[in-house]
Amino acid sequence: MAKSKEVQMKDLNESLMEISEELENICEELSELNSNMSTIGSMITINTLLSSHPEMKEKVAPLMEELIKGLELALSESDE
Image (cartoon, rainbow, N blue to C red; front, side, top):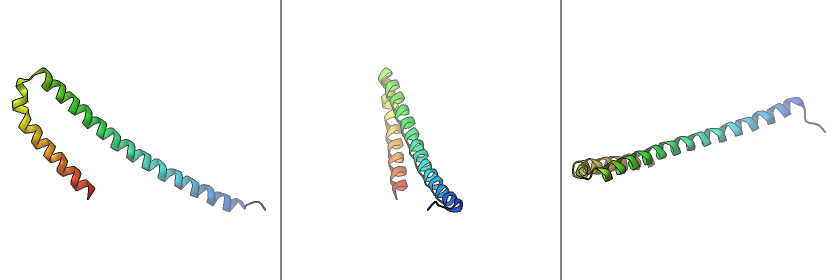
């Protein structure tokens, strides 16, 4: 027996809701990936600059240590 139009619409609506949730999850993952890639790009840029200007390492090293500590703290708080 064929499903009524109302039942078909309900099934379609449920399917669309599931697709919407999956797309939302994908968007969140892509956003996180984009953020991570941006961070990696910044780290590569800093590393390249420090490699080409060794005299800057002494000045920048303490700042980088503080930055890393801050990032670690932020990441540990976001996991909680």
